[in-house]
Image (tube, rainbow, N blue to C red; front, side, top):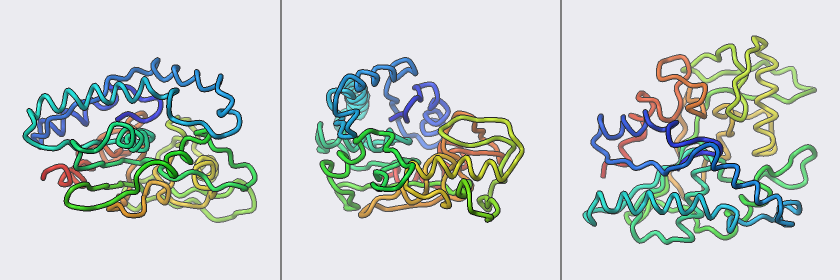
Length: 272
């Protein structure tokens, strides 16, 4: 399940690796970048402006694409086994909405990659809920994470770069032990060419603050580590992992959750 703004092609390499290297039949929901413009319909909903937006009906189109992919996967499996859902970024909490709305009778695993599961804390100056209430809805209405023989939640976070506060913080930027920070700014899946590491850390920190309320935390360049984990789930943190396939690479410079060397660290959860 795609992250916000991603399309199906962004996950072609991940799909190929799962199928070719591990023999895991994989179906990617059919979503284009233009499709995400459908979310603009939420601007007409008064609840958007009050910060109490609900997933439906504004995200019905996305849930339908996911259900189409689930039905295709079920046809491939021919009823022989249950399915695993993989959600990247916002696709992880959208998968939780899907499970709540469509049920979990055919699902045995939800594996999320760099998903901002938790809503931002309220009452912090400068922090605006970018989901306009959707994550508060998910927290309140979607089933809690579990790790049982029948249903497993596995939440994978990345530690790629530590952010710093915008002002009043002289702490130097810190970087994950596996991968050095490159000469780009990491924030909201946008790559910018600057070579100032202090600026990088502060820029990324402001993104983290919008998600978890704090800037000086570790994360994957977009989502803080603490936001990508769920109570009750099997929570995993991978060092040196960047958030997005956009602006990433499959070598040692900046791998993301779907790079071959990173997949091998979580794929065993699919091989049941």
